[in-house]
Image (spheres, rainbow, N blue to C red):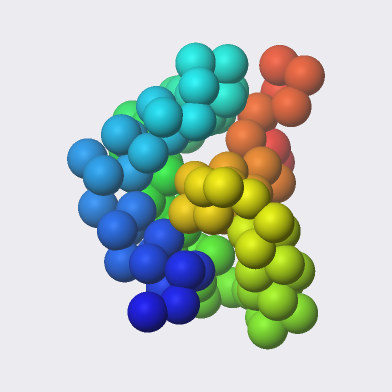
Length: 97
């Protein structure tokens, strides 16, 4: 199974998504939590929704770029998840619009 497909398959489930975000460290998990809270969602629900939206909304170019990033790391699935979340997490105290 492709690593991106693995992220989508596993992190589309709230509890798995929450555990995965927690394993990315407290600083990043805090940013995800703040953004999730701005939408009235738990970290797991927000992450699962973001992963599912990534699957349906991005093209092959973005997926190729993500594959390239993941290929250079020791933990490609967690790195991929973090890069999927980065564009939508709170930046400088502001939730994305």
